Length: 292
Ligand code: NAD
View 1 (cartoon, rainbow, N blue to C red):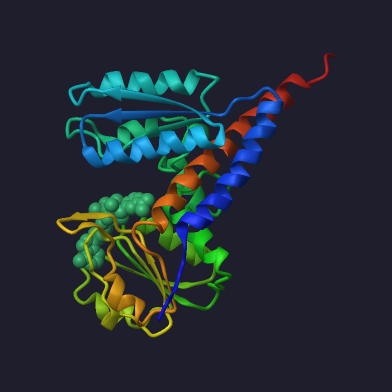
View 2: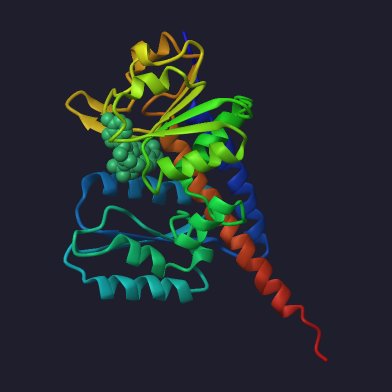
């Protein structure tokens, strides 16, 4: 049976690193700050945001949680984003998705300064990832890559299959795997038979949002299975992978909960501290210009 990839344990290691970097920044007089904008009453969003805010506290990152009624206008929300863009105490801005139907998420994401876009959703950062340029990468796929690195998995020459093509998980995940030398196939809603594809995969990242979509009989023996799915079912939280049947066939597997979720939050903290470090560096160099 498969070895478990323990996201909780791995996230603690990332958090410890982040806490050290935060301490160094604070010693230099910089307090990293994250602004979280939460709109409406989506219960899953409230749970995620609470976890993010708590995680910030635990590593010494200051967080501001700003909650708005679902009726807030797009203009008013954009004004709040712009205020945080200007706020020197804020290094990361996160707008929790989904937003109410009358607000266009792309418009809001575009309003975030790319330098503070710690979710990595801004088109500038998406373009940076696509072209292999420095920028913020989305937390969930970055967390998946960290897990593969932690088990020492060599991607070069492997066949990686991604289930899902969203802008926040599937697409950036595929780009990251590709840039590490994997041959990548992306399956999505219109793929007629995903099993035909997944049975050829050395690694599958499942991010389709469909409970137990990937079963053991669709997995090549020894494959690495990364389960991004977080589906609320009557039986509780459930991934996109049918854990029991998959575990019997796979070589490595992430559990849900306790897999990708904690790593996602850890990467958000890491991005926020990176942003604070970069902004501090810019401030330092601009104050060091010698007077002529
Ligand atoms: P989404 O709904 O935006 O995208 C789902 C994608 O899956 C689409 O591209 C769709 O074409 C594809 N898809 C749907 N049904 C499919 C099927 N039967 N076979 C193959 N592909 C199919 O979702 P998302 O935002 O990308 O999230 C995906 C899942 O990951 C959800 O369960 C979400 O809750 C979870 N998620 C978890 C984390 C985390 O931190 N663990 C973070 C983000 C999202």
